[in-house]
Length: 391
Ligand SMILES: Cc1cc2nc3c(=O)[nH]c(=O)nc-3n(C[C@H](O)[C@H](O)[C@H](O)COP(=O)(O)OP(=O)(O)OC[C@H]3O[C@@H](n4cnc5c(N)ncnc54)[C@H](O)[C@@H]3O)c2cc1C
Image 1 (tube, rainbow, N blue to C red):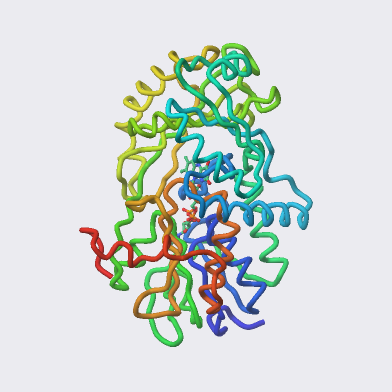
Image 2 (cartoon, rainbow, N blue to C red):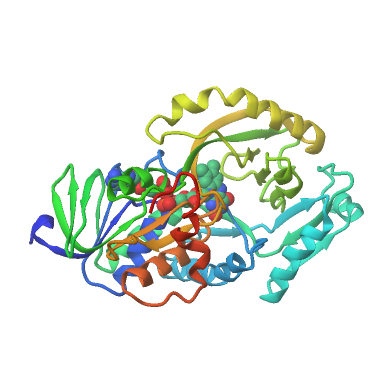
């Protein structure tokens, strides 16, 4: 068998989080030699795809994400079917807002694609969810939304990639990328050559791109993940039909509170802030420590005001990272100078659910096919005038 270093790879994908894993799987359908490398053992708890659950939803304020979710759901279902596993569990998602107009625009995005949804008046909200107290708010339910099992998702897509002939090398840290017709990929395990490279390195993306002359306004952010015990067991559980929850009114207050029904830890609802401090991904645990108390204070107050059956002190605290762009949209593009270096980055805290279709787009970009979506939202040139960017 040839040594990995002796193979001319069609593509090396750097980073086996959910985006890199789906990209490798999509590429393996189009190419014969695809290598997926990660700096850590797999699975690991250090990247953005860490943890146990994510929300999956079609409800988006931006119609282009709604459109992408249509295909994403199909691919999620396809891999569930192929591997005979359950990855997404349907719970619905309740979005509440004081601004009913905002909900109307999300509803119209959903209805355009014939996605099922219902709206709730303040009174209906109170009747349907007696454990919540939201005066002056209206609600929208995205009926197909639910909860994704993160570890099942990663395991399944990596399993299918391997089954189709792909190669995965964990504990292989890319130290340097040498651009050229054949790209050189220097790692701690050896040096590889590939016709193309995809950088899907999550919060570490900038560390790989900057030596390639790409200075993009990417901001890794440390996020505390809290679980809160139910005072009434099952009050907010998936089993009792409680949905994923998001308070869009708090988005305008710069806190953005969201929650997932209790399931992975019995009788504990996950409730978090969608913001956190800027961080270096290699130092995040020290940098986030001092924010725990202020996050708990904000969320405890919120819970006391709105979630009648939750304790107001968290029982479990975990950590994760976002990589934010200034506009919250992804970067899916080629390097402006070397078109065989492709970048998938800046998933801004909402990339998990879309990873199946993002992987397909990145595979199209690598193989010079036209992605079927409007790519202007995802080009790095949109940041040309940002202070931090230098393309
Ligand atoms: C708390 C939290 C809640 C979230 N909730 C949701 C949600 O409800 N719905 C949703 O859709 N999204 C959600 N997200 C966002 C989503 O999880 C991310 O957008 C997604 O996981 C990004 O995946 P990634 O593959 O880009 O990054 P990562 O998972 O970080 O993967 C990057 C990989 O690259 C590897 N790597 C980095 N540098 C190198 C190197 N030099 N050599 C080799 N390997 C390298 C890393 O080890 C890592 O495994 C949430 C994120 C967090 C943190």
